Image (tube, rainbow, N blue to C red):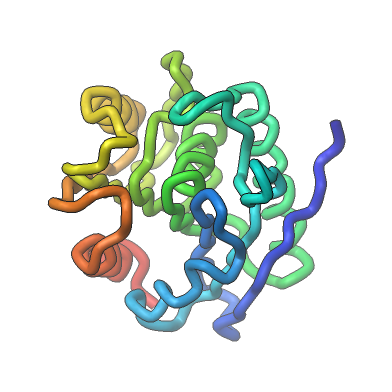
Length: 209
């Protein structure tokens, strides 16, 4: 299977040194869904919002799943490599620094961002994972060569997430050398204002414009 390009929206900050905030939507979303969230993060950074190449009952996703909460890990690995390949190409065509990408993913988007941290631990400059799940069931986490900052937030009342598995996931990231900032929010699977305020504070700390 050959890699396919992803549909995307790109907004340039007009500065060669700018970081790029990569927006990765949840199941059923698209490249427009998360654009409004960037208002919480200030300005001075590029925005790249992409649409997943997989469809499930007409709903865009970034990779296939076998059932609720059970990922098709073979497809996840392929789609993760496909996303990385796409980002390397679009960085050249749009003129941004591929070494300064910070992923912001929600649910399905958070999971492919997490898979990128697993399979390519030094590719992203940072990651914001809203409502993530461990991308792979086996412990294949590679060590990061630098303390890449990672923000995670889950809903304490979210029925879709196994809290014990997520605790193991967070510990695995920390053990692999990532600088993990983990939060549990008193809400369900949907994003809350607190998620966004905490994440924007974290972003400004680690990636000042």
